[in-house]
Structures are given as structure tokens and as C-alpha cells.
Length: 80
Image (tube, rainbow, N blue to C red; front, side, top):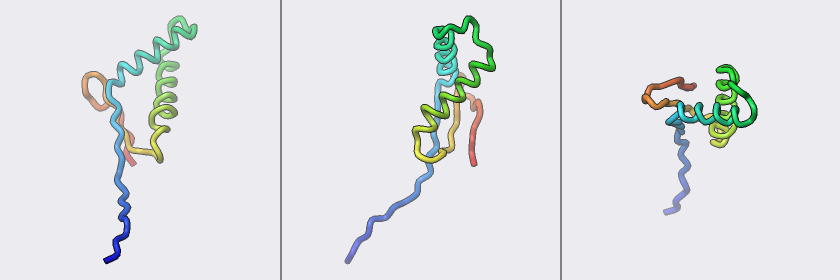
């Protein structure tokens, strides 16, 4: 009997925990880079950019993902 390799497409769901700590770290880094008190808009934009480029972008394709803060609540979820 001849056997062939079977390839299965398995969905990937990325779960990012401790999002509040990640956001805090980004804010501290911005302060270290010379921003006295970075605005919430700047912090949020920087967090979103880093999340997309350094974490989600490192996973092949566009995986579904969930972001959790320290209270274990869903902050936002991208599913499509």
C-alpha cells in the first residue's frame, strides 16, 4: 500500500496575555525616548503598531487573535 503525506490546514488563534503590561512598557519606552508625558493617542498608536509588526506580523498569514489585559477580560478580538 502506498501512503501519501496528509496536510491539514489547522486554524491558528493567537492569544496575547498581559496586554496592560505590554502597554505600560511601551509607554515607559516612549518616556525613555524623550516624550515627557506621551499622549494616550500616541501610546495606543505605538502599541497597535508594535503588536501588528512584531507579534502578529511574525505569524504567517493573518491569524485570528485575542488580546487580554491583567483582569482577564477580552479587550478586543479580531475574527474574520
